[in-house]
Amino acid sequence: MNNAQTSDQTLQQVLKARRIVRPLVLVGLMGVGKSTIGRRLATALERDFVDADEEIERAANRSVAEIFEAHGEAYFRDGERRVIARLMEEGHGVIATGGGAFVDDETRALVLEQGLAIWLDCDLDTLVERTSRKDTRPLLKSGDPRTILRDLKERRSAAYAQAQVHVVTDEGPHEATVQRIVRELAAWQ
Ligand code: S3P
Image (tube, rainbow, N blue to C red):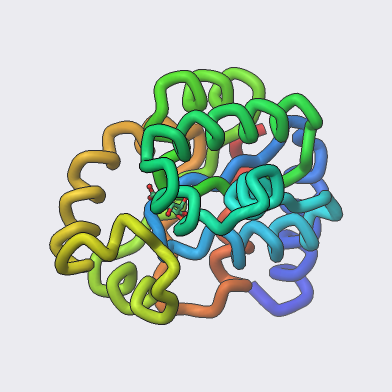
């Protein structure tokens, strides 16, 4: 296939994916790239983008780490559930969620019913490498990050696997992942 045919096919896929009116909700483990890829996906599909963790921080006027420290994880999860319900209700185009959000039964049911969940998945080494670039994640501070991430991957994969779309992200450029998502969305129609 020549370049012109490839880009024509890509354009057709983008146009098809743009017809999806439901919020596209990125789910998956910490470090998989939900926010970065979500932003680029939103640009490609000409939709707005919102990051659920940032919205939680704005609502609480504190960082995620501060909320965990002051009130504990259960309190954070309550806020997270409420904020995501509001974002779904507001009908945003692309929503990036924190890694634990889709594991919550209520949030998962809501997203699956009213939105389209996209599970971004990658191997453990990549997750460890990417999460090591920032030290803002409270769950990774209680022990060895690799062990914690391996354990979370094991425990959460069954929930993530319920997402309508599953895309494996690798070390390649983010644009390639965005194109892969667009292709899956076009096929999902
Ligand atoms: C969490 C992931 C974080 C954040 C919080 C808890 C988790 O978001 O919501 O630290 O339970 O996996 P990212 O996945 O964006 O890092």
